[in-house]
Each structure stands twice: as C-alpha cells, then as structure tokens.
Image (cartoon, rainbow, N blue to C red; front, side):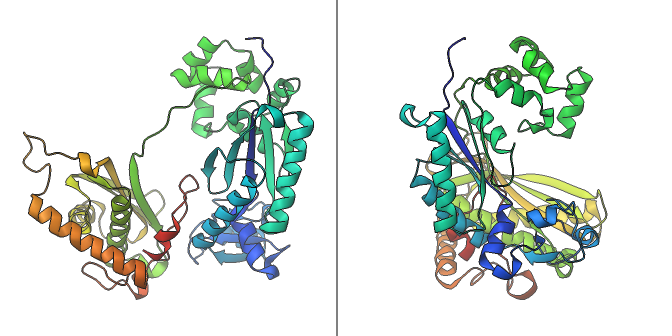
Length: 422
C-alpha cells in the first residue's frame, strides 16, 4: 500500500462547548472561569469548564466543591441543554455553508469528507479559515473550534485535539508519523486508563511501538480485529465503517439534595421511564427489556437490575415494570439516599415487526390492552407537546421537586428539540 494518501477528512471540535455557549449568552461571563454543573449542588461534578477555569486545573468531572477550592472566583452555572442543542444546529448550518457535513459525531464535533478539488493543503487551510470566520460572525464570537485535517476520520479527530483552543492541524503524509509518535496512547479515541494498563501488560507503552508493529501483532495485543483496523487507520488508510443500529434508549438524572430520598427519587425514575417511552414511540419501536441503575450518596454504592418486557411501547407498561424493579432495588440496596437514577430500554424492535413468540404467552400484551395503552400514551404525548412537559403524568404530580429540567446531553446523543417540551 504505497499509494499517496490524500487529505480526505476535516474534523471540527468546538472548544469547551457548553461553557462557551454560556459565555456567548451572558457577556458578563466572558473572560471569567466558568463551570457548568448538572444541578446546583457542591456534591455534583462539572460537565464543562471554560478555558479560564481549566487554567486552574478544573476539568470535566471535577467536583464542584473542588472547583471552588481551586478557584475562588469560579462561576457555577446550571446546564441549559436546550440552548446547547439550538447552538449545535446553528453551528452545523454554518459549517454546511462552506462544506457538507458528512457525520455529526457528537453535540460539539462534526466530520466533513473532502473532495479532490478542495483537499490541497492551501485549499483546506483556506476552508478552515472560512469556517472559523463564519462561526465567529454568524453564530457567536465565543464559539471557537479546533480543526483537524487528515486522510481518514480518526486521524482528523486526533489532529483536532493536537492544538486547542482555536487550532488548525493538517496531518499531511510527510508529517503524520512524526506528529503521532509524540502522542501518548491515551490520545487514541477509546483508549482509556484501563486499556492503557492492559496494553502496558502486553509490553505496548508508546505510540512509536504501535506504529512500528505489524497489523497481525496489533490484532493479537488488542485481542480483536480493532487492533488491526487501528494499525491501518494510524498509517493513514480509510476503512469503511459499518452502520450501527440503535440498541438502547435511556435517560439518567443527577439528583439534587431535595430529590435524594428514595420516595422522591422514585418519582424522578418514573418520569425518566415516561420520557424514554415517548422517544420509543417517536422511533416507532417496541422494547423487550427495561433496566434501572442507581447510585447512592456514599462513594462506590450502586445497584442495577433489569426485567424482561412483553414487547411494549406505552408508558403504563413501562412505569409498571419500573415500579417492580424499584421495589426490588429498595430491598436489595437498602434505605440509602440516592445520588443518581437512570432508566434504559433495550432489546428494541420495529413496532410493526414485533410478533408474539408461539412458545411465550407473555411476548406481547393482548391486542386490545396494547391498543388502549398506546392510545392513552399518544394522547399524553400530544398534551405535553402542546402545553409543556409534565402537563399530564401517570400517578403523581410532577410539578415542584420532581419536575424535570429537560433532557441532558450525553455528547454522543443529541436530543431532539421536541424532547425539551416532553
């Protein structure tokens, strides 16, 4: 494979995205250390930090009490995920004024495939400059981005990480190996601390070793085909990616102090199940499994469990299944106060394709019950869409302490704007 490898991908990574949006919306925050928190309590962790805050050693995941100790002038703001989604759509629209967006990788990252008439070094540098200028002029001056350009998407993403904030790195074939050799293995997306330790146990500790390794050896060390794929990607080659089908639908919520008693946390979990059900119906899917995950206030205390579902998509069935799981959790986990709750739906199938198993009488609800529950759930969806989230709920008043703050962003999943009224 000695052919010349052209520059084929442009990867754009917004810098300190959530914090930058907050600074854009509130000029008084500009130039100040800003931390975005999921809820306004010192026991939770930062979900974003401005570069002014990062200068004090504050990062995503830093506890809020610790952030305040590191910087007495830090400003803590609650996350406004609906605003982050709105800005995301504006950013994508601006990028597409200059080059088509091939893949939205996360709320703050997009990838664009380059054509042969726009991938010269001079051409991509000019394109990156136009995108940056467009973001500043048409989206917001606080919204800066680091851009990486390389022969495949993985390398372009790694290039975007090489110079932050507001950087531009072009990994041409003549500099690629030298630039990569300087990086730690942890700069490869997906290589965390546990993977680093596992690779070190196999004798692989530097990027230079990995680059010099034959593809078969890389596969052996990784223990699967990804090691071999990574070899070719790091050497600049493109490898087709298989489309991933949706596997789960879920929501989690970090609880403020007033929501941590189990009786109140249960209402939050019920609401998460209802939200997941709304998304399930929008996707025209049924779920065959529901999971519940909780974390206690005490460090390291957690519980998770799941239950098989009879291929449902209505809120009544989901909440009933959750209530059964919650009762089991309360017995096994004890009367601890909870820090976080999460609900996930899995074993998804197209609603129209779901069929009862001849050997499983509970595989589907009876047609009449299923139709009535679906009709009620659809009616609730319409009311909440028109009058706002929690206008109608099942079995409790969701206003006050249990009222939702709207969906959060897990970076790899961007909520639809409709979810903020559900």
